Length: 239
Ligand SMILES: [Zn+2]
Image (cartoon, rainbow, N blue to C red; front, side, top):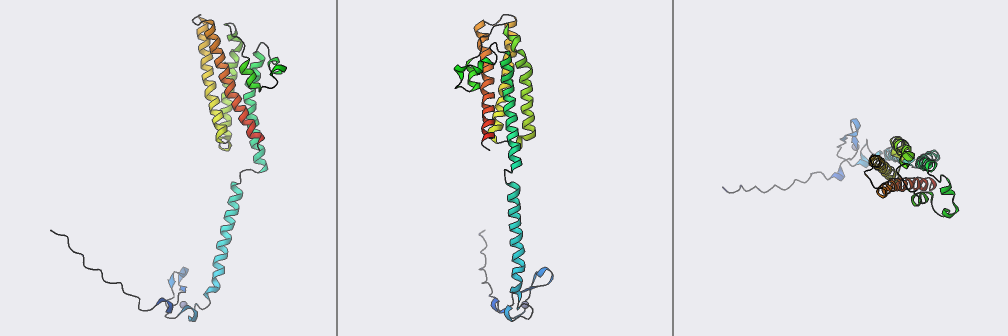
């Protein structure tokens, strides 16, 4: 069976009255109905002066739009004075969290704080000094640094978690990345130090291997904590 041929569409009927001859005013509830008087608007008795309404419609619309734009602009304006102060406080806190681990380390280090006050290291950042001056490690040193990894490290992880939970929405992505990197690295360092302890306890590990594990646990922590503190201080000082 072939397709039925569609009959040609009849041409559209032109309106009998050109619209210019009808009133274009509106009437009825909510002005939803056309006036429909067969007379141009300018001579329609009801709609002769309807252009006078135009300003009363346009002005509130423009005013409402402007008010919305201005108030939203105020709302999303990123930095008031108080917000800057809050941000700087948060960055300082993050930086202090990182530096507190360094302080704990230096009190345990045989040379202590002399390590960073040494004139020979004046041009290096404190984190660089710590990375380059990791002391030699012997089996007996494991207990000495144990609180650093088993107590303080856990504190720092949870403090950083607290900062993220409280202020995460106000921190830029670079800061959140640095915090997450640090938390991950500290977890790895804890595991490393734990296994170091297990292995040196029953003399399963050669001394140079233990030394290397110790170095890598410390240096990993210094690198990420240093990056965290540096980024926090950069953001704080750029405000
Ligand atoms: Zn009319």
